[in-house]
Structures are given as C-alpha cells and as structure tokens.
Length: 352
Ligand code: HEM
Image (cartoon, rainbow, N blue to C red; front, side, top):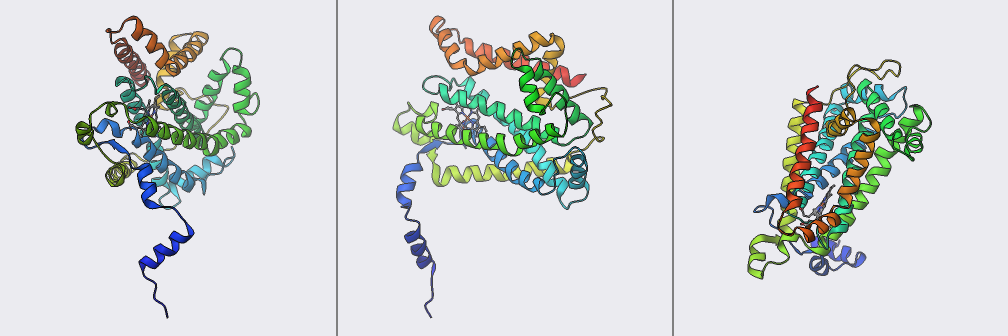
C-alpha cells in the first residue's frame, strides 16, 4: 500500500489549486507600519477584528433569536438565562459592538490628526465616513432587536427623528417602519438591516478601504528613505499577521472579562402603551440626542445633516483652508474643538 506523506498532500493540492505561493507572497507582502513601534497605526486593524467577532457571535445568536414582536423578547430571555453560554455570546456580541464604535472613532481621529485624509486619500476618507455610519447603523438596529422597554422606545424616538428630516423624512421613516407606526413590519426590517444589509455593505466597504490603503501605502511611511523605512515598517508575513493575531487574542480576553463582569442585561418587555420616564439610546448617540434636546427639532436635524456633509467633504474643505492660511494648523484646532463638543454633549446627556 502506498503511504502518503505531507509533501504528497501538498503536491496533490498544488495540482488542483494552481496558485504559486511565491507570486502570492510577492503580491501581498508589502511593508506595513511596525505596530510595535507605532501602536496608533494598529487602530485600523482593530475594528476589523471586532467586526469578525461580531459576525461569529451574531451567527450563534441567530440560531435562537426570533424576529417577531410576540417572541423577540422571550427569545433574548432564553439566550440570556437558558441556553448554555448564551449570556456569554450575547455579552461578547454587545461589548464587541461598543468597542468597535470606540476603535473606529479612535482610528478616524488618528487619520484626522495626522492629516492622512489629504490628497490622494480623499476617496478613502469618504469611504471611511460611510463605514462609520454603517457601524452606528448596526448599533442602532441591533439595540432595537432586544425588544425591551428601552430598546423599543429608542427605536420609536429614532424613527421620529428620521421623520422630522425635511423633504425625505416622512418617506424614510415609513420605509424604516414599514408603515406609519412601529409594528411587526418594523422589527422585520430592522432585523434584515442588522443581519444582512449592513454587515454585507460593511464587509464590502472595509475590503475596498483596505485595498485603497494597500494601493496608496500608509501616509507617514511613503516619503521615508530606505533606511528609515526598514526601521519603521515590517513585512506583512509573518510579523504583521502575527501581531494582528496577538491583538485578536488580547481583544477576546478583554471581551471575556467584560462579559463576566458586566453581562448584557435585559429590562422589562416592550410595552407600546407605556412610555418610560427616561428614554436613552446607546451612549454613542447621546451627543446627537442632547443636541436635539437643546435645539428645536428643525435646527437639530438640519444641523446634524450639515455636520455629516462637512465630515464627508472635509478633505476638500481643509484644502481650501490650507491654501488660504497655510501656517495656521486650522484643521487641528477645528478637530480638537469638534471632538470636545461631541464629548461634552455625551457627558451632559449621560449625567441627566
Ligand atoms: C471598520 C472600520 C475600519 C477599518 C477596519 C479600517 C481599516 C484601516 C486600516 C487597516 C488602515 C491602515 C492604517 C492604519 O491601520 O491606521 C486604514 C487606513 C485609513 N483609514 Fe480606515 N478603517 C476603518 C474605518 C475608517 C474610518 C471611519 C475612516 C475615516 C472616516 C477611515 C479612514 C482611513 C484613511 C484615510 C486611511 C489612510 C491612512 C494613512 O494612509 O495613513 N477608516 N484603515
């Protein structure tokens, strides 16, 4: 009888999958910023790891979650208190989503304060802004699926805010709700957005985003001479892949501690007839919520639409400012001001 060894197996596979590993390595193995020396360049990979964790834990949750108003709450109760390790999977999913928002904001701040959105990376910045809003959209739709009082009323308020947008508001709100009121249709829609539409869009856009990063190279390292490049970068295989692997293990460890210490809770079942005293969205919407409270709905909504427009078009606005006041470092001051304003509104809302 013929005995097959590892080399035979590799040759067998090689004949059937004719990819030349050396070619593949040459194509992908470009130098990457040395994450051990410049940790802030690791902030971009971190949301990708968290997104992967959310997809895996999300698939497990889907085995038990039932997206109907009559059964949604009971199914979350079942996951949390009955299913073995259900509480753990649910808590890791929840904490990974919150950490993803934090790391996306931190990565975006790194990009902003290093001016990495400037030519030729304007389009990648704009893709990043869409990624940010998809991440927030995942958070909003996921929170609504729990169907306890707070999550139900956060969805009611969220769709009411969407409704007050001039011109397209009523149409957009009807589309999200599947009619003029929150019904079973709404839950189905939020569910489809949360488990299919947003994850697919996000996965596709993150792919395009990273291809752009590879095509442009990372900002700070492109103009360096060879000697400094060697010092500041390391190869994708094995150094970068191993570093990301270690970061992934540390993140899992951290999420486990958070899940044990602060497991995902569950309030009272949603009751469309009883409005809770305090309606709170997820913390990352606190600033937007507070802003709407201190302005009137019209200025509040229009102000936020203008804000989104400014972030998307920031690379071009910045360019005009740079040409007019080349030495003023205005983008840095505007960034610090904008970030402090967001933080102040968030803390204000958290305290009431
Ligand atoms: C799931 C979310 C995201 C992932 C997985 C991701 C991934 C990455 C990675 C791996 C890099 C390489 C350098 C680094 O790690 O710092 C990068 C660079 C970049 N990202 Fe992101 N990113 C995300 C969100 C965003 C957002 C929200 C923005 C801005 C609004 C953005 C804008 C950029 C830009 C302009 C670069 C090029 C920076 C440079 O060349 O120095 N990204 N991103």
